[in-house]
Length: 114
Length: 117
Image (cartoon, rainbow over the protein chains, first blue to last red):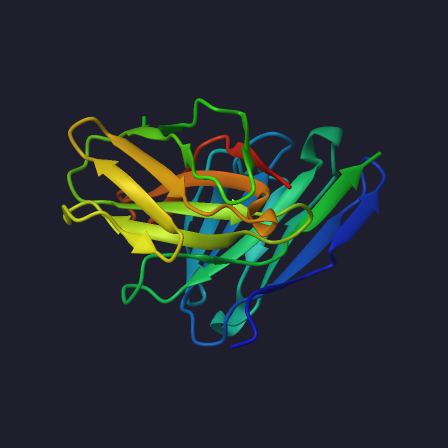
């Protein structure tokens, strides 16, 4: 069990550019979640996958955001035409549903939009 | 709306002392799970302790224990024999079960705990 990993750990981009983040969950976990955490706040839910199916998206996930989980393994989160308000920590978590309910988090990708 | 409130933005405790972090939540559901997560500076979030709402017995994990008051919707975390490594942001969270069955976590804003040598 190597834990949840995320890449890159830090990303600095200019407004209007596209960025993509990757998350590798714990290998046997079937559920994968994306959260966003801004400074001084707790994480907020963005979307989740059950295997390869994206089953729910938060209203926080605007049309500029897209997520995929091909083959039910790793996941990518893409932000198009980044805005300064997108600056945040993007967290990935995975769980083995319904065996356990707790989610295990990766280290996050810190995005800074200049 | 389902919410989590942590009323103590910052707390400090002397090493080896005991500290209690407060959390209240609001949900209309009767079956749910509560968690405390720890986020050390520049490090990833880790699970400290979990509590099933249907269990009356308070969860304990080594130096960490909870006081779960279901009627009051209160879920406090007690840390005994505080250690320097306990310095971190602590988030209270619970699983919400949306119509789509996501079991997404709802978090509070966190309490920054500093353990003083």
